[in-house]
Amino acid sequence: MNAELDPIPVITIDGPSASGKGTVAERVASALGFHFLDSGALYRLTALSAMKHGVALDDEAGVAALAAGLPATFGDGAVRLADEDVTDAIRAEAVGEGASKVAALPAVRAALLERQRAYRQPPGLVADGRDMGTVVFADAATKVFLTASAEARAERRYKQLIEKGNSASLSALVADMQARDARDTARSVAPLKPAPDALLLDTTHMDIESAVQAVLAHYASRDGRQQGI
Ligand code: C5P
Image (cartoon, rainbow, N blue to C red):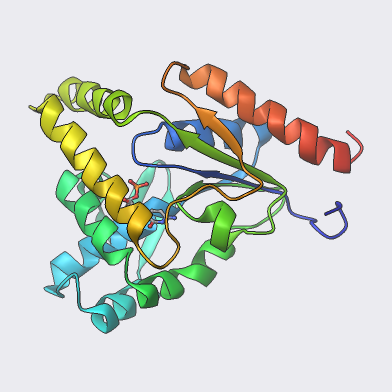
């Protein structure tokens, strides 16, 4: 693909929960001055909205209708649902669990598709999720699949929870992580898997800054070459 056919570059960063991809994606976006899409937040907002409206998480048509009209806004470091600040609420473990359930419903994924594609605005986009490189931006020139062992990811989540003053059990977190990975990988629609043309980055023994540099170098080698940089 050349720059004329791909005028707005997209860097897709997919991977399992707590692989560090959210932080890496945000830092890459800020280094390049690109927009940032946290697609997981849209699934979390959909689950939270269903919980608030008393819609069952397996009611595919009901949840898809909520997803299609989600009154969500992002800005100033806050996520809002209608007028309510839900920045912290969407990060709750129960909402993450709910997100993973509604994300397995094809009609919900379809309802969120165009909304995600609308983030592709100049000068470029960094998109973080599970199916950014395989489905939503399958034509992106730069794709990364970020992983880390379930134990390393559980440990990172454990540290975050303890730092925020929550109690947590490491073994329960490893089990949760494995259950969520299994559900995300096994679902029939847009399963979690690397795009064939994705760079695989295992961050089990890598810090965030090294991962950011690896993604930037990969982008420079692919898109930079195309744009004559
Ligand atoms: O990335 P995050 O943990 O916020 O995502 C919450 C859930 O949303 C994931 O466990 C996954 O099931 C789902 N998701 C998805 N496709 C995406 C992003 C998130 O299915 N592109």
